[in-house]
Length: 191
Image 1 (cartoon, rainbow, N blue to C red):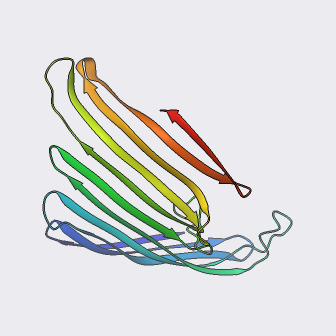
Image 2 (cartoon, rainbow, N blue to C red):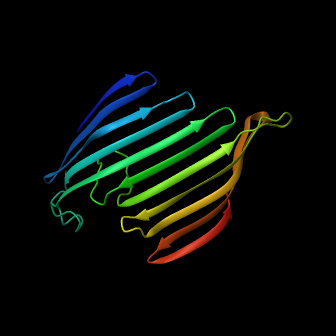
Image 3 (cartoon, rainbow, N blue to C red):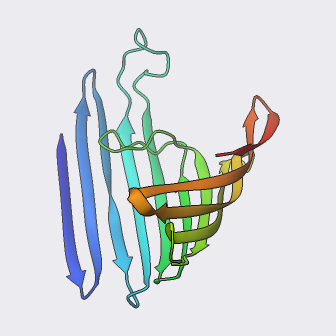
Protein backbone atom coordinates (compact mmCIF):
# COMPACT_ATOMS: atom_id res chain seq x y z
CA UNK A 1 0.00 0.00 0.00
CA UNK A 2 1.23 3.49 -0.78
CA UNK A 3 -0.16 6.98 -0.31
CA UNK A 4 1.33 10.23 -1.61
CA UNK A 5 0.18 13.82 -1.55
CA UNK A 6 1.83 17.02 -2.72
CA UNK A 7 0.31 20.37 -1.82
CA UNK A 8 1.29 23.93 -2.64
CA UNK A 9 -0.25 26.76 -0.64
CA UNK A 10 -1.18 29.78 -2.75
CA UNK A 11 -2.05 32.44 -0.18
CA UNK A 12 -5.19 31.17 1.55
CA UNK A 13 -5.83 28.77 -1.38
CA UNK A 14 -3.98 25.58 -2.36
CA UNK A 15 -3.40 23.18 -5.24
CA UNK A 16 -2.29 19.60 -4.89
CA UNK A 17 -1.88 16.14 -6.36
CA UNK A 18 -2.60 12.86 -4.67
CA UNK A 19 -2.10 9.22 -5.42
CA UNK A 20 -2.72 5.85 -3.80
CA UNK A 21 -1.56 2.38 -4.72
CA UNK A 22 -2.67 -0.98 -3.35
CA UNK A 23 -1.73 -4.48 -4.45
CA UNK A 24 -4.41 -7.03 -3.60
CA UNK A 25 -4.02 -10.79 -3.19
CA UNK A 26 -4.82 -13.03 -6.17
CA UNK A 27 -3.43 -10.57 -8.73
CA UNK A 28 -5.55 -7.51 -7.98
CA UNK A 29 -4.45 -3.89 -7.73
CA UNK A 30 -5.89 -0.38 -7.42
CA UNK A 31 -4.20 2.92 -8.36
CA UNK A 32 -5.89 6.29 -7.84
CA UNK A 33 -4.41 9.65 -8.82
CA UNK A 34 -5.45 13.22 -9.58
CA UNK A 35 -5.47 16.87 -8.58
CA UNK A 36 -7.31 18.53 -5.72
CA UNK A 37 -7.55 22.20 -4.89
CA UNK A 38 -9.23 24.88 -2.86
CA UNK A 39 -9.74 28.44 -4.04
CA UNK A 40 -10.57 31.12 -1.47
CA UNK A 41 -11.40 34.34 -3.34
CA UNK A 42 -12.23 36.04 -0.03
CA UNK A 43 -12.62 35.20 3.67
CA UNK A 44 -16.27 34.10 3.25
CA UNK A 45 -16.06 31.73 0.27
CA UNK A 46 -14.21 28.50 -0.50
CA UNK A 47 -14.45 26.43 -3.70
CA UNK A 48 -12.99 22.95 -3.22
CA UNK A 49 -12.59 20.33 -5.91
CA UNK A 50 -11.06 16.97 -6.65
CA UNK A 51 -10.79 15.08 -9.95
CA UNK A 52 -9.58 11.50 -9.61
CA UNK A 53 -8.92 8.62 -11.97
CA UNK A 54 -8.59 4.98 -10.93
CA UNK A 55 -7.06 1.98 -12.66
CA UNK A 56 -7.90 -1.38 -11.08
CA UNK A 57 -7.86 -5.11 -11.54
CA UNK A 58 -10.22 -7.16 -9.42
CA UNK A 59 -8.77 -10.28 -7.76
CA UNK A 60 -9.23 -13.53 -9.62
CA UNK A 61 -11.22 -15.28 -6.89
CA UNK A 62 -14.68 -16.31 -8.20
CA UNK A 63 -14.88 -18.80 -5.31
CA UNK A 64 -15.13 -15.78 -2.92
CA UNK A 65 -17.58 -13.78 -5.04
CA UNK A 66 -18.70 -14.14 -8.69
CA UNK A 67 -17.81 -10.46 -9.25
CA UNK A 68 -14.10 -11.21 -8.76
CA UNK A 69 -12.88 -12.77 -11.98
CA UNK A 70 -9.79 -10.67 -12.64
CA UNK A 71 -11.49 -7.98 -14.75
CA UNK A 72 -9.79 -4.62 -15.35
CA UNK A 73 -11.62 -1.40 -14.49
CA UNK A 74 -10.89 2.25 -15.10
CA UNK A 75 -13.06 5.16 -13.99
CA UNK A 76 -13.23 8.76 -12.83
CA UNK A 77 -14.62 10.61 -9.84
CA UNK A 78 -15.22 14.29 -9.28
CA UNK A 79 -16.29 16.33 -6.28
CA UNK A 80 -16.91 20.07 -6.33
CA UNK A 81 -18.07 22.17 -3.38
CA UNK A 82 -18.73 25.89 -2.84
CA UNK A 83 -19.25 27.03 0.73
CA UNK A 84 -20.04 30.54 1.89
CA UNK A 85 -20.10 31.56 5.53
CA UNK A 86 -20.48 34.88 7.30
CA UNK A 87 -21.61 35.64 10.85
CA UNK A 88 -25.24 35.47 9.67
CA UNK A 89 -25.57 33.87 6.19
CA UNK A 90 -24.16 30.52 5.13
CA UNK A 91 -24.71 28.16 2.24
CA UNK A 92 -23.21 25.07 0.68
CA UNK A 93 -23.53 23.75 -2.88
CA UNK A 94 -21.94 20.38 -3.62
CA UNK A 95 -21.80 18.07 -6.64
CA UNK A 96 -20.36 14.53 -6.77
CA UNK A 97 -19.99 12.32 -9.85
CA UNK A 98 -18.61 8.76 -9.55
CA UNK A 99 -18.41 6.51 -12.61
CA UNK A 100 -19.43 2.85 -12.36
CA UNK A 101 -15.84 1.62 -12.73
CA UNK A 102 -14.19 4.00 -10.24
CA UNK A 103 -12.54 2.23 -7.30
CA UNK A 104 -10.71 3.67 -4.28
CA UNK A 105 -9.51 0.73 -2.20
CA UNK A 106 -7.67 3.07 0.21
CA UNK A 107 -10.49 5.61 0.50
CA UNK A 108 -13.93 6.03 1.93
CA UNK A 109 -16.05 5.59 -1.20
CA UNK A 110 -18.93 3.25 -0.22
CA UNK A 111 -20.82 3.64 -3.52
CA UNK A 112 -20.01 4.34 -7.17
CA UNK A 113 -22.12 4.83 -10.29
CA UNK A 114 -24.05 7.91 -9.19
CA UNK A 115 -24.36 11.70 -9.42
CA UNK A 116 -25.40 13.73 -6.40
CA UNK A 117 -26.26 17.38 -5.86
CA UNK A 118 -26.51 18.73 -2.32
CA UNK A 119 -27.43 22.14 -0.94
CA UNK A 120 -27.81 23.71 2.46
CA UNK A 121 -28.43 27.30 3.49
CA UNK A 122 -29.24 29.15 6.67
CA UNK A 123 -29.42 32.48 8.43
CA UNK A 124 -28.11 32.69 12.01
CA UNK A 125 -29.77 34.88 14.62
CA UNK A 126 -28.20 35.68 18.01
CA UNK A 127 -31.05 36.31 20.46
CA UNK A 128 -30.68 36.95 24.18
CA UNK A 129 -32.35 34.73 26.74
CA UNK A 130 -32.46 30.92 26.79
CA UNK A 131 -31.31 30.55 23.16
CA UNK A 132 -28.00 32.12 22.18
CA UNK A 133 -28.20 31.03 18.53
CA UNK A 134 -31.06 30.18 16.16
CA UNK A 135 -30.50 29.17 12.54
CA UNK A 136 -33.54 28.77 10.26
CA UNK A 137 -32.34 26.60 7.38
CA UNK A 138 -33.25 24.79 4.19
CA UNK A 139 -31.36 22.00 2.49
CA UNK A 140 -31.54 18.79 0.53
CA UNK A 141 -29.95 16.47 -1.96
CA UNK A 142 -30.84 14.74 -5.23
CA UNK A 143 -29.06 11.53 -6.24
CA UNK A 144 -29.40 9.67 -9.55
CA UNK A 145 -27.64 6.69 -11.14
CA UNK A 146 -25.55 7.04 -14.29
CA UNK A 147 -28.69 6.65 -16.46
CA UNK A 148 -30.45 9.52 -14.66
CA UNK A 149 -32.82 7.29 -12.67
CA UNK A 150 -33.63 8.49 -9.17
CA UNK A 151 -31.78 6.83 -6.28
CA UNK A 152 -32.94 9.22 -3.57
CA UNK A 153 -33.99 12.80 -2.93
CA UNK A 154 -34.54 14.87 0.17
CA UNK A 155 -35.57 18.42 0.95
CA UNK A 156 -35.96 19.86 4.41
CA UNK A 157 -36.75 23.10 6.16
CA UNK A 158 -35.54 23.22 9.72
CA UNK A 159 -34.05 25.17 12.58
CA UNK A 160 -30.76 24.71 14.42
CA UNK A 161 -30.35 26.04 17.93
CA UNK A 162 -27.88 26.54 20.74
CA UNK A 163 -28.82 27.55 24.26
CA UNK A 164 -28.01 27.69 27.92
CA UNK A 165 -26.39 24.67 29.54
CA UNK A 166 -24.57 23.95 26.25
CA UNK A 167 -27.80 22.58 24.72
CA UNK A 168 -27.47 22.21 20.97
CA UNK A 169 -29.63 20.61 18.32
CA UNK A 170 -31.50 20.79 15.05
CA UNK A 171 -35.10 20.01 14.13
CA UNK A 172 -35.91 19.30 10.45
CA UNK A 173 -39.01 18.32 8.50
CA UNK A 174 -37.78 15.89 5.82
CA UNK A 175 -39.57 15.31 2.52
CA UNK A 176 -37.82 12.17 1.23
CA UNK A 177 -38.04 9.63 -1.56
CA UNK A 178 -36.01 6.56 -2.43
CA UNK A 179 -36.28 4.26 -5.46
CA UNK A 180 -36.19 0.53 -4.72
CA UNK A 181 -36.59 -2.06 -7.50
CA UNK A 182 -38.13 0.53 -9.84
CA UNK A 183 -40.66 1.81 -7.30
CA UNK A 184 -40.31 5.24 -5.70
CA UNK A 185 -41.24 5.31 -2.03
CA UNK A 186 -41.95 8.73 -0.50
CA UNK A 187 -42.12 9.75 3.12
CA UNK A 188 -42.36 12.83 5.31
CA UNK A 189 -40.93 12.87 8.80
CA UNK A 190 -39.74 15.06 11.61
CA UNK A 191 -36.06 14.56 12.38
